[in-house]
Image (cartoon, rainbow, N blue to C red; front, top):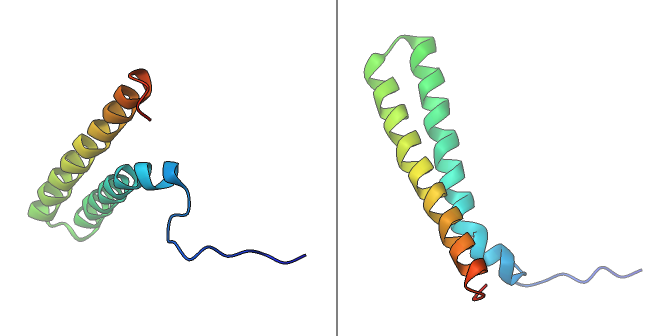
Length: 77
């Protein structure tokens, strides 16, 4: 059985549409990691930076979820 490989990074249209939300989710994960790191090495300012990154990432994830729902409900997905 031969496996067919795609030349595109995201071969599916749905994957391409959801990719920005995944990037924002990764940004949230970086912010959480910075928060835990700041607690471990006792650097309070790094914790504030981590929380700020989490908030920015969570707002981005929320925006892309609401945008996706809007596109689905208006039948443009």
